Amino acid sequence: MGHLVKFVNNITAIIVDDEPLARHGLHDILVEEKDITVVAESKDGEEAVRHIRKYSPDVVFLDIQMPESNGFEVLDAIPKETMPLIIFVTAYDEFAVKAFSENALDYILKPFDSERVHSALHRVRTMLQMKERADYSKKILEIVKHYQSSQKYIDRIPIRNAGKISFVSVEDIIWIDAAADYINLHTSFGTSTIRESIGAMEEQLDPSKFIRIHRSTIVNLLFIRELRPMDHGEYTALLRQGTILTVSRTYKKRLASMIK
Image (tube, rainbow, N blue to C red):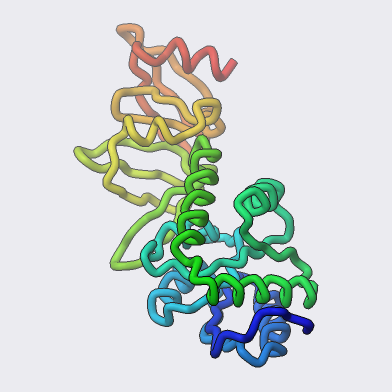
C-alpha cells in the first residue's frame, strides 16, 4: 500500500453500522490488511457499547446515524479511560465532516472507497505507535460535547428497563404528565415512565412544538384538536385521540395564541 509506518502487530477493530451491506463491505476492505483483525460487528448502538466493553478494540469504525442510538451516544456510553481510536462513518453529515476536519480526526464516507479506508488505517497505525491515545481521547470528547451543545432540543428520550435502553421519539409523544418524581410519556404506542421532573423535561423540548398547559402537564401542539372554555377561566384541551386535558389559567393565553 506504500505505507511509511511500520505495521503494529494485530490491530483489533470493531465495525458499527445498522446496515448489513455496509458492515460487510467495510469488512471486505479491512481483511485486505494483514495486521487488522475484525473482532466484532455491531448492528446498533447498544450492541456496539457491549462489544467495545468486551473486546477493548484498538479502533472502531463507528456509524454516526443509526436508528436507535447514534454514534455520539455510543461514545458517551463507553469508558473514557479506555477510549478506542475512532474512524467515523457517514453517508454525509456537514457538521460531522467540519468537526472532524477541525479536530484532526478521521472519517470515511459511504459508499466506501478502499483507498480512503486504507488511508484512515495508516493514520491509526501512526497514532498507535506514537502513543497519542490520551490526546486523541480528549479530542473525541470535545466532538461529543460540541455535538451535544449544538443540539438545543432533544429528538428522542432514552427509556431504561430491565438493563436495556430503548428510545421514544419526541415526535411520537402526544402528552406528558407528572407523577411525583416521575413523568409519563404518552404515545400512540403506549405509555413509558421515566424518572425526571416535568420542568426539566419542558426545558429539553422545542417550545414551538410542545407547551406546558398545567403545572403537571405538557402537550404536543400537533395533537390538540380544540380548546373548550370552562368555569373560572380554565379550558380543556381535546386531543385528536379523544383525551381531554385541563388547561390552567396560567397557561391558557399562550396556548390560545399558539394554536390560532
